[in-house]
View 1 (cartoon, helix red, strand yellow):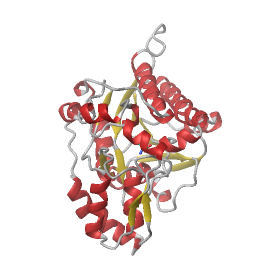
View 2 (cartoon, protein in one colour; view 1 turned 60 degrees about the vertical axis):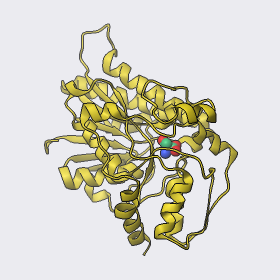
View 3 (cartoon, helix red, strand yellow; view 1 turned 60 degrees about the horizontal axis):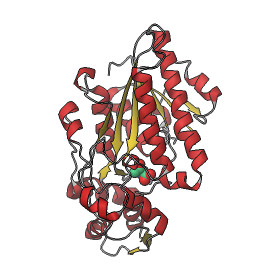
Amino acid sequence: MPKDETVLITGANGEIGHGLIEHLHTGRRARIIATDIQPLDSDLKPMCQTFLQGDITDPDLIGQLGQSPFTTIFHLASILSTKGERDPELAHHVNVDGTLHLLQLAAEQSRREGRPVRFIYPSSIAVYGLPDLETKARHGRVVREGEWCSPATMYGVNKLTCEHLGRYYALHYRSLEPATTRIDFRALRFPGLISALTVPTGGTSDYGPEMLHHAAQGKPYACFVRPDSQLPFMVMPDAIKALLLLEAAPRENLHQLVYNVTSYSPTAAEILQMILRSFPSAQLTFAPDERRQAIVDSWPADIDDSAARRDWLWKAEYDFRRSFEEYLTPSVHQRYA
Ligand code: AKB
């Protein structure tokens, strides 16, 4: 990204926002306009040119954001799957109406500035919905982008809807009028994410990071899924890498608008064993919660990210062992020292 470009980051104070802002500030020196419903952490403030606290469903906030011209939007703000099941209408409002506002903002910016606006959208494995454990065991290991898209959560429905909205705005928006807007929409479907610096809230893959952060603080933790539960995961540095690689990919190399990305697929028992290697006295147990278990059971055990590897040379840096030995364990040790 040339230095004179400006990026808008929504959900800036969240897990991905932290890593992304640090990278864009130090690595690329991009001008950053950030927004979040929460106040921005003090360490991130000096890295952002502008921070606006507010709700992305609020038209006033969208109006204020629209005053600065930007070239890329990373739309990270979202209500995650467990919180979304507790208040499905709120999840729809924030996740879908909020995204629609931002797509309209991107279209307006593109029309006004006479150039395309890149719209980078983190979707999720939650868009998949396998009907039962037998099907998951038989088909859940190599799920491609077009398969099993029948989500069982409001969050998954919202993510799938927004992928379609992005495709619509990129390819068909105001198709009856002369073309004046160009939205370069690019989405990736993340697996569960694990960061050494932040703990997610309201998700269902949260048992992975929660086990680690409790162990590192010497606090007991009862994992809310069965030991054999298996999901794809990725550490935060790889998630940031994926977002930036997708953003930088030449448009002509992209043969689809939505891509799976993943790193490794441990069971909950394997995560626990890996944590015990670094924190042998960790008090980790299993106490499955039927409803959250059902969500995890509906998500694939693994996903096929060969399209991302082919089109934009995606490759995770961290496998399961390296994630813990070189990133998670040393960083959480330092964090809670
Ligand atoms: C969640 O658990 O809701 C998220 C996700 C898998 O997108 N972490």
